[in-house]
Amino acid sequence: MLLSELPTPAVVIEKSRLEANLRSMQDLADAQGVALRPHTKTHKSVFIASRQRELGAKGLTVAKLGEAETFAAAGFTDIRLAYALYGAEKYARLARLLPTCRVSFCVDTPEGALAASEFFAAEGEPVDVMIETDIGYHRCGVRWDRPESAAFALWVDSLPGLRVCGILTHAGHSYYGPQSEGETLADSLKRVSNLERDRMLEFAVSLRTAGVKAAVSGDLEISVGSTPSIRYLTNREHEGFKITEIRPGNYVFHDMTQVNLGVRGLESCALTVHATVFSKHKNEDGSERLFIDSGKKVLTSDGAFRAEGYGQILYDAGNMVPMPHAVINALSEEHGWVLVRGGSTLNVGDQVRVVPNHACVVVNMQPHMFLVDGDEVLQTILVDTQGRVV
Image (cartoon, rainbow, N blue to C red; front, side):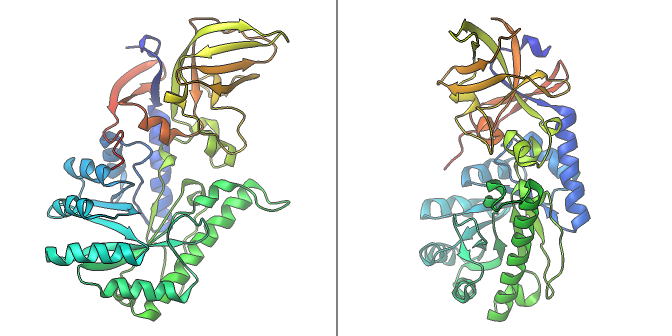
């Protein structure tokens, strides 16, 4: 089948760019001496996860237990829930995975730790937990620099049914861009990347001082994430500790957020939305408004760092050349509103490709994606964990 024969809208993945992205991140992990545990929230696909494993990934990261169940059923045996799991129903589901799969999850509150301890102590076998750590994003996690955080980790490690195996953070503030006058995009990413590394290593030292067993023995897993900050990861040793694993997710596809942050160029964006122009009208000022069949339910309403509109329309998808003067400036549920300043050569029936602002959410909206090589459709890729938010 040719790409032009696909019903639109369709999410398409360029095979060569996907493969280049997968290999590039594995090469970075190997060069820095860390395990790559990719976050599957971006692709949500057993097919792509299997390719990551073939290239050297040491395990998987998921956001929700339903995703862990899907990947465990597909034969993956080391899964990390980068989420503070809570509730007896969820603990019971996780326990059913443990005979065939190592599954670890996060804790960051006394309430969560006690609830997990009560359940898994009754199960008879301890479960691995990560102390979620706040190194500056201020979403979840204990503060890396407070004495009570190390005391909390030691207390969790003493609870029956739990075993602290490591510390985990997400440098989500790497998406904020420059934070001071004169700071460049590259400077901002390097700053966050270095702070992410250094603060986690300092926290690891404090856990060893407190007496957390995995830190004392040297087996503590130190896990960092975020595609933008990983771009500039330079691992180093600090008092016997080094970063042990990275958990980037978006790198498999990249999107306009990564492009605008300076992480990668358009040429690295493997995922695009294939859409059709189905309506065209003149505006009073001479500009034109087009409508493509991709609205909020496909492109999502997510913005992007320094983005104008809701995705970048391409003039030449083969060479990833953006279309000048065309902006997706509004979305309805089923309509993408495209403002074309000065007129356009596009007409009703023409097909376009759009690089979305946020690829992760786009994927979760679709049951499948299409792997392509130029104009040739190679295969359908199932979105195996679509909607698995429980």
